[in-house]
Image (cartoon, rainbow, N blue to C red; front, side, top):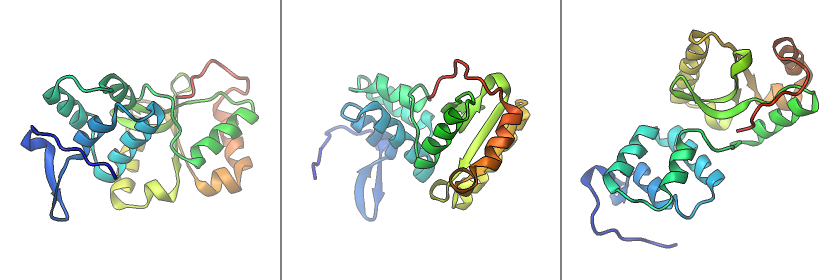
Length: 192
């Protein structure tokens, strides 16, 4: 284990966890930005949001206080959804099924309406959330999922929610539903 000691930490960037003084999650993301690969950093940002409710604005505030931070540009790209990333086996399997079926690929894990959504086809006004138990088992996650759905419908998107079972065990039913909503020839969608 490597430790690092910083001489000047703004009190807003420090906290205590199990009686041990530590930096906040947002501050730690700034610390690791320089040495993580961009896709690993994007996953870390997502985990920080899911597990600790760390918002992009929290990290942006730390970056503003700290000034020049190695890896800051990469961190901002990861935070604001500009990095191609899939976060789970479920997402990777979903994208593979779409490609094998000749359906267009969505933008993935991008901000839409202030919240990160799993899959979105803006041109077809469709948002899909993939609900694996790992990320969607808590009350907080459940409430966030409902907000995400309301926001998608408010912006005029069709909304679909697919579970691990839908993607991994019953893909034909899911693909039939998606074929009714999407064209079956590939188009220029960015897998992000």
